[in-house]
Amino acid sequence: MEYLKRTGQSIEDYRNADPRTQAEIEGRALGYAATIALEAAAAKGAGRLTPERTPDTDGPDYNEGNGPDEGVDQDVSQNANSQVSVDDIPGIGPTPGQGGFADWFNNLSAEEFAAYWGNTKTREKIQRLLRAPGGFHEWAMVSRADKFYSWGFTANDIWSFRTNIKNLTWINPNTGLPGRHGGHGSGAFHNELGRLIDNSKNIGELQSGLISLGHRWGIPNLPSLIRR
Amino acid sequence: MHTIYIGYSPNLSSDEVIQYFDVDPNHDESFSKFEQEFGSNYIAPGDFEVYSPQDYKDFEFNESFFQKLLPFKIDILEIKKIDFMVAKSLFFVKSIEIEILENDDLKLYGPIKIRRFEYENID
Image (cartoon, rainbow over all chains, first blue to last red; front, top):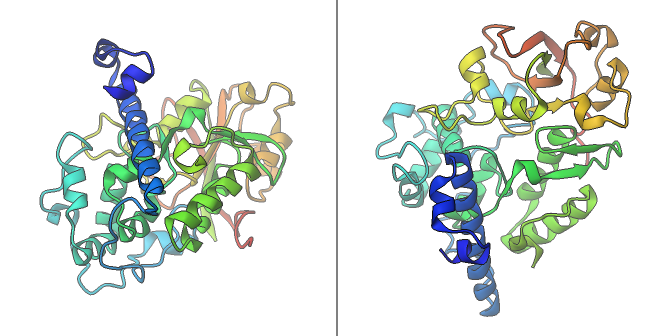
């Protein structure tokens, strides 16, 4: 409600919107709430969203999205407990906000998360549900959800770092040509963002790196969450 | 090595093709339209790029410009398979599993093996 008031929209506007627009409003509201929360946390000297979970940073190393094919079609699991199928995921909700996926994700133990993430099929299911309902770019890249999980991110934290893909345009620094999410430079951009996340030791480093990445790509509309 | 397909749509805009590769909110398992229609594996953001002449009105959108937009080296003869006269949008997709190469919305050419994307191994 606070977000709707702030943006001059009414609850009727929200109710009359199509599902994708509703999701967009929800995403922006989450981002707004997260910004307020982070600013409050920053004022208190806190540097992270939620307490870190048991470290699992030595989990499967893969490069989904931009890696060689060999990394895609093989089961990259290095975890002996990863013999789980999609049907074996107990309690997973079908879609965010509708079936308790966020609760399921947030309450996984480190061992459970490692097992599901270490299996290609169950990892893809988690990735699809984190990307739902579509139409957004997740700055906390879904393909790196294991890292964000280890930093204590909840599903809602990941969703709060989203930008409508229609609003994500850039000048590709490698060619000088205009591009956008899903368009020219999208592969290079996701590759660069993925490496930035991989090389960041904490959320503060990532935020600094994102600002540099934004400047390099001429992206004017970085979420306020990472502009602070 | 990567397996990619290039292709075009005679009737979908670049926005619509981008949405085609995104998760489908109406699908029970959040599969993308592309996965549903072409039987492909999971397509992650960054595994495809879509371009449209409408997005590059200041440029002459032809085979060589499409070649310039692609993030990998490809023989111009492969690109010449695309009918630029009927293409409303063009794209490439990295995928290792494709069951069909054509439906009413998209036409694919491939599989094509490429050595690497230009942004790989850059530090």
